[in-house]
Length: 162
Image (cartoon, rainbow, N blue to C red; front, side):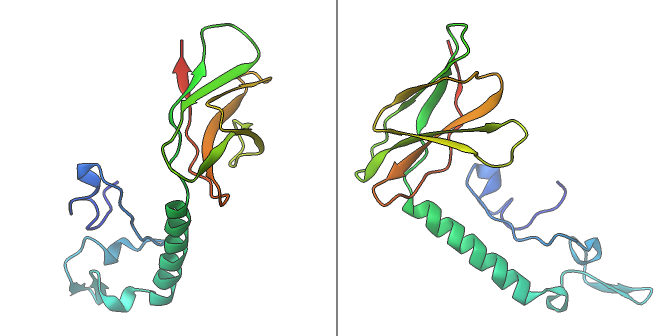
């Protein structure tokens, strides 16, 4: 907040489109959102001399690799839901079948609520529902699509369905 760049007003974020922002972990606020000037011997403003172009190039390569990987994968499953109409310790997940011609199937994933990454995977093939013998109250569930080349979509988080 209160930071940003051209991606915010320039047709992207404010209009609901995806955008990317290159940042550094230790921002120096004297060099952003400042008019270029020298004050009490200190230089202010976004000048090229304050940029680490090697770092920016490495970040761009990582972002390009991530975007290429996502572009090879199918879209995430739509309409992912957790059935909540029956009180049980099992969890039923349902979703809509994608339309990608190279779609091979789906995977149900889950993790502890404190885990940063998916720790469990069940391959469910072309099914559009799956029952997991695990309580929906104790973990985060998700569903992802897989194409014939093994590329995986981002995980769709299911919402409750009565």
